[in-house]
Length: 268
Length: 292
Ligand code: SF4
Ligand code: SF4
Ligand SMILES: [Fe+2]
Image (cartoon, rainbow over all chains, first blue to last red; front, side, top):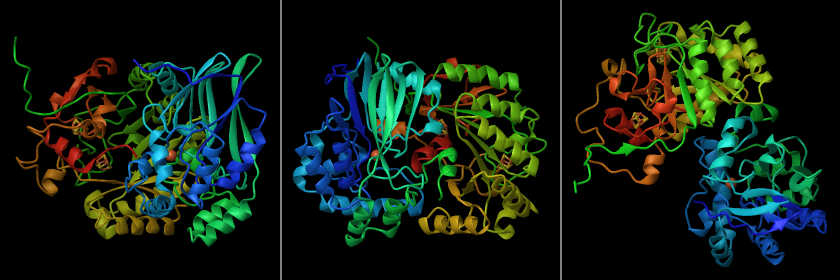
């Protein structure tokens, strides 16, 4: 029997997908949704790709943003030597390793301890709908739920097994939603820290709210000083491939797990 | 009170029906690979083709159980006359992968697949088998002249806008290691694939492969072993089933073994399976999964 207790009831909430150490986008997003939502939730993967991981963590903790663990936090909190992204492609693995090693080294032990205290899932109520927040999927922290590979029958099963109306997740880095019925379905918040592989540097936050008494998700573009981020990444000697993604909006790494449809929409 | 039953082999529970395989072409193939673990060939009729109606009946069950994805294999799936209709039926329910040797991929085939993919909200992946960087390495395994024909099929898929996945086995020199993979991906890029993806399979000493190398030895068994939860979760038989014209089998690897046939329907096949086969040893040792 799952623990069905809810963290609270809200009219409107913001969900933040992977921040990936993009503290500038985090700052911009928090400002953007300020006074517009009742609460903000962060769905894990605070580190990776970007510079100075502690800046993101300080911001999240200072603002008291309720958070759940991503695979990054789980790995960092348990001092694992791998991010558990689960790639087999040697190029993807190479870059995943660089980004994890950098993040691990620069994250203070106090923040790592905090990561260990975070829950893996969180339940809320938004309007009348029960919402289950998770990182990859409700059943596995590093399961990829892509739009073109998460079909309706499977979503129906997830909702039934986990006794919820809505599953909200991240981990893939691309935002999408699929409703099975009004107010019943799945929302992937995508990433706040990395563009959506669409050729623009903007990133995305997600708003969950009731409209005409039915829950819906809105994806909101977030503009931030991506040139500054790119400069700081270069100064930190992070791979030029990561810097290029921040500037151009096209993903250059971690492409292996992407299904055919999403992959074809990107440049690489 | 009776003592708990002691089993000689560990048992894999079916924890979730995520992946459903269809042996849509039976054991019929237009070639005869030296390493084929179910010895498919033009004259191997031990498993017949599946009809659209047979596939449809199991697809409806899979939908009810909330399956996540569908894989089509054979033999050679494009030898099935109803293959496009069948793929269309599956693509209405979820993402689809087709495992093919690409010999029957003509411009028209590639275009038809492209429109099927475009009509579905879900991904269609074409997975093409290739066993080397050139004819000298591939052809001894897949047959005289196949290297050029496979490359032509891959080219047609790429030209029609597909990003095929290429499957190779560890029979392909060096590809098990990371440098070998990188080299193979480079080769595919040079051959004109824009976004190559690679799936490397370990060899299974089953079927034709037993004659090419050798069969399993007696120590290669899970007998007496206990599997932890994570070890169990890594086995594909805990999350998938293989549908054939002769019933539902535990996995794609064991269809030549009558004991691996679980039932006529998916519903009845969702039960634990005792890992008493030598191939189970390979699965456990290598973390083998036939999915991409
Ligand atoms: S390995 Fe594939 S292509 Fe080769 S004989 Fe077997 S089924 Fe046919
Ligand atoms: S061969 Fe592998 S997948 Fe098949 S039953 Fe044995 S362990 Fe499971
Ligand atoms: Fe993640």
